Image 1 (cartoon, rainbow, N blue to C red):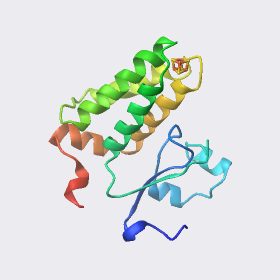
Image 2 (image 1 turned 135 degrees about the horizontal axis):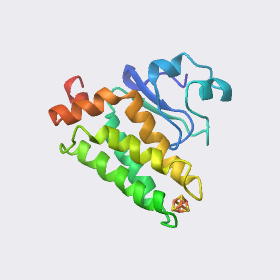
Image 3 (image 1 turned 180 degrees about the horizontal axis):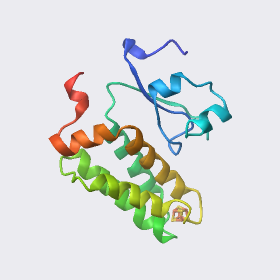
Image 4 (image 1 turned 90 degrees about the vertical axis):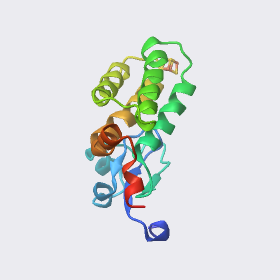
Length: 158
Ligand code: SF4
């Protein structure tokens, strides 16, 4: 599709429906048809239809950091779970990315995301929580590597 992966790289992950849609691993995505039902069954959504494709040079911690910062900046601050939670999500991912991650941070990310999801006035709260939960679920070992070794796993094979 679309000429394949740039430079012959390996497909690592796809966000099929814009930044608020849960990320799916590349091998899962390649087993799906690009329709609403198949994507939903795999745990994501077509959402805005803005497909984000990531190859094996992408660090998933850094990618989530970029997304988390976006939602932190976009929060209008009207409701507490989003106003406080998006800041928490961004700060926790930021410290994992910058070699200060703690073992309890992975559960903390899930806990904060759970406490945002479904508890806000508009959809931005869910949009901030869903990427975090899916990144940690599907790429937990990469986050764990950052915490354990204080470095990015991607650097080891690029
Ligand atoms: S969920 Fe919506 S209304 Fe609530 S703080 Fe976030 S952006 Fe504002």
